[in-house]
Image (cartoon, rainbow, N blue to C red):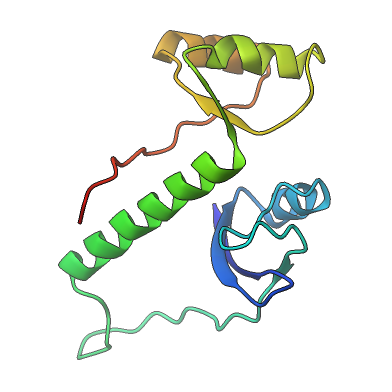
Length: 140
């Protein structure tokens, strides 16, 4: 996976994770990359500074607790993005993924529930699916 800092036409910056640079470009061309703040699909990569590994001393690196908080925040942001931009097809996920794959219904981003067996069958049929961590929303 590769992470890009992205910017929409209204200068909102956000992070996006992709399998490759080509995967990002393909999704961007299909207007599947969407600003989580305003819904804009005019997305470009923002200027990014390289990550440089350091050794020892006080490098300003986050503590494990800070890293955990950042991970939870990122997972909540991802859930919000999916809920806002994808169709929830619930327990019919496997059936709907097949219908999309075989051209029986319009192509669109979907999410829902599938058993491990259903997911395995989809992959065996050549249907690209993935499992994402789904952190529950809390009041905090």
